[in-house]
Image (cartoon, rainbow over all chains, first blue to last red; front, side, top):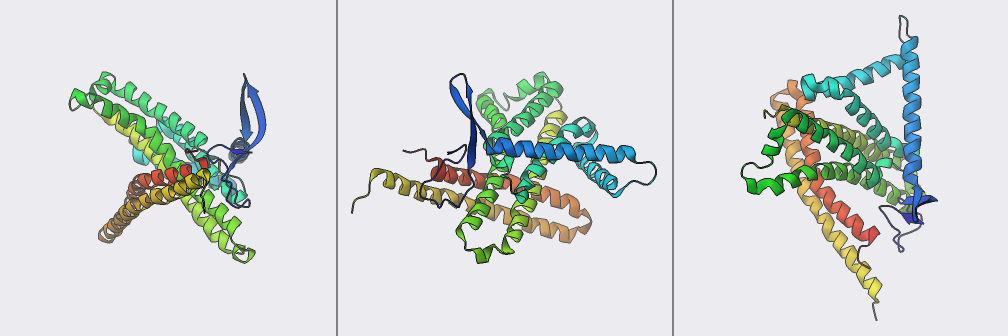
Length: 243
Length: 84
């Protein structure tokens, strides 16, 4: 009953569990697809973000003179995100703050959801590849919008023989973006599952907290940062080339 | 002592997975070099710590990708088992 990226390896101990589980079968025109752990965890993450956002809106709207601690925290986070986007995109940052901010918050909360006992949604290639496809669409749209025919001409540079290589390097962008995020988070998930499943109870007191700080918090924050940073770098790169 | 077909393929897959994660050497060296240069840059110009930090992390993340390809190949060999 395990499927997705990792299909059961019969000789591994049953306590070691980092698989995507199939929970509920659905029939679509003869093919059976499953509601998996990833879907459930993604919905929990989305619910958490929605509740946070509603609470933030309420506390900011309620502010008259002295803002509450929560409102100040929200302002700090939003200010940091705006500074982060403007710092690497300059004037164009205003157009992309919505997308990059959403991306960062979703990926970050997905990555650290391992702390709360969920299987991180970003440890499934389906999730990361879809996010990377959205980024890829943004990048290509920026290229076509701002370079117009120069983009097509740039594909044939320095000589026309380089056309296939240029196309491959464009297509490699979402794949490397998604595999980077997926590989990092899956590695953390596998390590934690191995640690919890293979060692006796004595080692499970206190030590896992340090591992969680590294694999979930540190690695998750870095990867969310890198994903957004690379997306912005690619978009800015496509926008700024003089065609 | 006979080894049946499936056991042989599983063993070879495990060896291949082990060989695939050797790819981790390269990114390790590369990230170390990047971190070392980042440290010396901060030593030379402590005021630019934030910029150096973000540039270094970005470069390290890009360098890490090749190692992660090795990891993904290893995981595919171990758990998806493309060779039956």
